[in-house]
Length: 375
Image 1 (cartoon, rainbow, N blue to C red):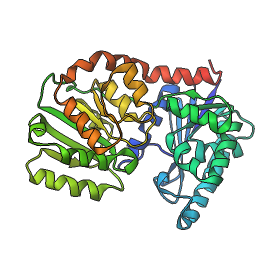
Image 2 (cartoon, rainbow, N blue to C red; image 1 turned 60 degrees about the vertical axis):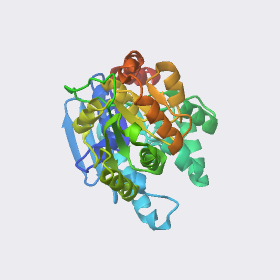
Image 3 (spheres, rainbow, N blue to C red; image 1 turned 180 degrees about the vertical axis):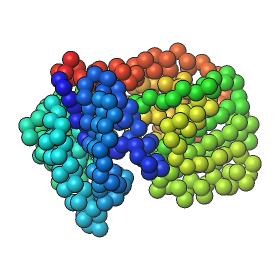
C-alpha cells in the first residue's frame, strides 16, 4: 500500500482547545506515516497544504469551528452545516486528484464517512466511530439512516470503545473492530504517585453535561472537613458550555478555604504536566466509551477515580486502574473520592502498567494497517 488519506473534523491548529479534540489524530497520523504515506484532510479556518516528510496536512476552510457545536436539529445552523458539507466534498475531490490514496479512513462516521462514501471514487474506505456518532447523531432519524448506510457501505468499521463496537454492529449489521484512541504525551519529570494523603486531584476535559463536570462540582461540595484534610489540592482545567456553572461552584469552595483551582484548556505539554502532577485523575462522565484521558493517565502512571459508564467497568475489571464509583451520580462520585483519598494511591501501579502497554500508539497503528489488509 502506497498511501492512506485520513479525513477528520478535528485536528490541532492554533485555536485554544482544538488540540485536545484532535491531538490523538495527529499522533496517529504521524505514527502511520512511519509505514505509509499519509495525507490528512482536516476542517480548519483557512485553506492550506503543509508537507513534512511522509505526512501531508491539507486543511479546508469551514464557516465555524469546532464542528461539534453545529447542530443539525437547529435551523439556524443549517447554512453553516450545508457550507461545511460542500467544502468537505470539494476538498476531498482535490485530494483524490492530487494524492491518489489507496485507502481512506474517515474520522468520524459523520460527516467524514459521508464524504468518503460519496466522493471516494471507488477507493476502499473505513470509518472510525466515536460515541458522539452513534449516541448523539444516531438519535436523529434522518442522520441515523445516513449513519446506517455509511457504516454498512464502509469496507472496514472501527470504533474507539468495546461497547461502542457492539452498537455499531447493531446499527448496520456488519462487524466492527475495537481501535482505541490514544495520544503520545511528552515526557515529564514529575510522575510519582503518593502512597498516603493529602492527595492531589485533577480534572481535565470539556465542561459538558456528558462529561459530568457538574457532577464533579456537586461531589466536591459534598465533601466534609475530614475529607478535605486528605486533599492537598483539586485542579480543574478545560472549558465548555458549563463554564459559568463550574466557576460559580468553585468560587464558594475557594472562599471556604477549600484548595480548588480552576483554569482553561491545556495544550499537550501542559496536560501531561497536570496528569503527572496528580495522584488521581477525576473522570465523572455520564456517557463515555473510552475517553482519551484514560490512556493519558495510564501512559503517565496516574490512577483514576471514575464513574461506571461505557467501557470503564470492563477496563476496571481488567486493570483495576483506580476507584470506580457505584453509579454516575454526584453522591456516588463523592463516595468514590472519599474511598480514593483514604487508601494508597500508588498501589494501582501494576494494572496501570498493563493498560499502558495495551494502549500503545505504535501497536494501535499496526492494528489498523492489519485490519485494512495493508500489512
